[in-house]
Length: 157
Image (cartoon, one colour):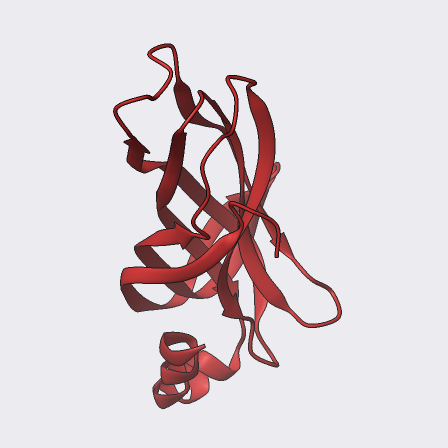
């Protein structure tokens, strides 16, 4: 694991909302959805400090869930932002930390859904150890209409 990579999540909260007969606009078409998953939390990164004042761009993958069999992710809306910035007394006074862009990716082999935060930062003896995130996932899967108890698999995925 490289310095600054995802380590673990704190304060994760998730809600699953049944939406039989609901729909969402995907591109220019309306698609039927069966459930909505909403999650917020704070991702912790491995401990590290910048050794010089160079600004760097890096990607941090925040794992959200393994998409269950029979479920299809139709659309996602996500955000990420600095949650904690740290420096010591000798830190560079011109440090900068932020999240430039947020994407969501699903690994087609493992079905791991992750937020990909493009982080920019720099400043000697500074770091950004925590990233806050929020994601809304629109799910299609008729099995959730037939058996609402199956929504628990989204809650626990």
